[in-house]
Image (cartoon, rainbow, N blue to C red; front, side, top):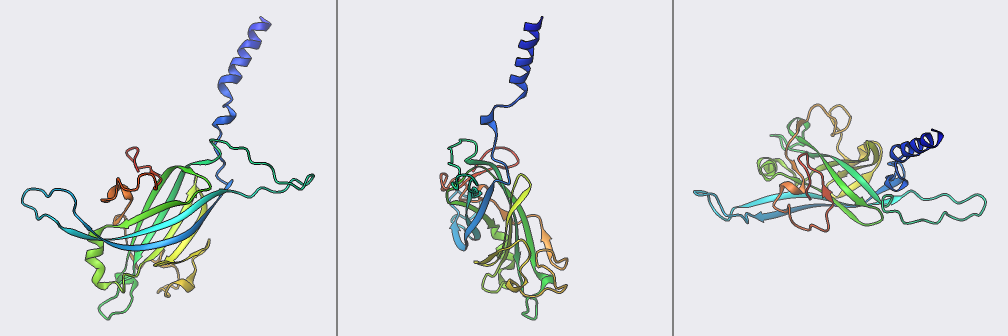
Length: 246
């Protein structure tokens, strides 16, 4: 009976305790660094055959925002006894992040009838994009696109295609970095940097102002654009609500 009890206990331990190799890197154990920001305008020709009765060879103007970043393990502290850093042991699980979440807010700061920048006529768009299987220690890319009809509708009130950008990056619900930008000029800061943007009516943030109309559409991820199959190896796996893709 004792032998059976011991065997049962061992089996229970095998099935209950997960193997060490299945452990993923803790969300607080990495740093995310945004290194570059690009705001690009591109005219894209319709490459697909037109529907019957529709005009062929139509072109659309796209504005897209590209962020370059990298994820690195937090720097190890020196061993107080030896004065040396702990040697890194390659680990298939620890060298990858399962899921990375980018929360975007993009504002089109528009001019009113008096040709003055106005919150009351400006547009704020929001979108969340999730990436899966992101490798540490290498240059990575994240991007968001402004839907062409949005740009076509408001471009006449835009000043030199000026846009404001806010980006919050999270791992497992934990915020790792925040970026604020006026076109390609950006700052990394946990708080809103008022010196980067014009003052608002309430002297608050453009990204929180109640005077600005907020749209839950208008920003597209790469899967929703003509470039959905482009640069397959260079862009991280996008996790859509319906399943897999890039």
